[in-house]
Length: 269
Image 1 (tube, rainbow, N blue to C red):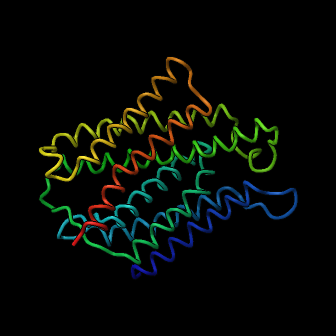
Image 2 (image 1 turned 180 degrees about the vertical axis):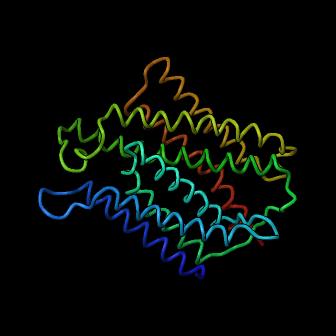
């Protein structure tokens, strides 16, 4: 199957799965309610097609093609894969309402704006581990950010005493918060390992054009670490947890994709 067809097929699967999740979340007392396994099954089908596409476009004899849009598509695939696998045992499939259309968008962008930025196949294995840890950390903390958004919506509806419809289908508030901090805790560990492995290759931040990425990543690490400490010592939850989570996520996205966009899309010759 050609790359455009793979992109279209995977995107359609993602959008269909998101639509079924939406029907389940905003269901009324009448009409057809799609079963949960159908949405997950279509989502898994899309992730398989997405992974097949990434294998063809990223891996080559010249090295790993991790240009901006390819990196975006790889991160979105990791996010979706983690969400779908987690959905088998935890109630996190509702995150797909936001994440699945976003993943479809990254596929469309990578198909329309193909670019080349190779990591040489002879690159040292610690650097490859650093890239893998970074992708996993970004992906887990992306899940946490979307979980925080859903938690904010749920908290607002409950405070306004409108717990019907969409909010009624979500897990209890305490369960949602527990899932949020599980994601943040795991993401923080991976981000710590990614930063430590990255510092091994840091010689001159300015010469390597890494100053913004490094500073923003450390600031994000401090925010997530501060949130976990606040949770442990002061029992932070609710809006405080949401604000700190989204703030750390914005810093992290600016650190990687913001820096990458400037270097590869704006400053590239």
